[in-house]
Image 1 (cartoon, rainbow, N blue to C red):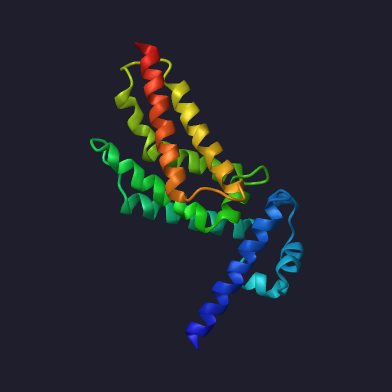
Image 2 (spheres, rainbow, N blue to C red):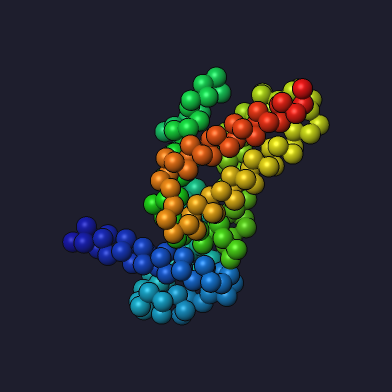
Length: 194
């Protein structure tokens, strides 16, 4: 009986997540009411309140879960600064997570998304593999902030474009593209500094 209940709870939460993703692609979280969400997914308000106190708490839980999934990928695919080949498996897994929940990720990172969540993703990317970049740049380079910002914002823009493309590349293909774009940016900057 508990397994059946768990399945129902998972199904209800999945419906709510999908409904919220659809609504967030059209409007900001501030403009979405519980009534509108439950109408979108055809469930009772009381069912919503069994799981969440309001739309903001629901969004917070969803973002928390997404960050937890990404953190698990980081732990399972650690990046070794001395081994450049360790970066690609992390990027592939990162894109795989995004691909599994494409609509929700697009909503969170899109124009009506939560900028605090976008900032968390940016910080995570910076902490995970962009923090290794200073070792490859000349010491005490006052301009390092520019290629760093270019790479970081480029990665977020690439993710948004990939998620919004109806016929997009596989996570592996876009991960390889991302990796090569980062490497080419680094090399281009280093060649410019010579």
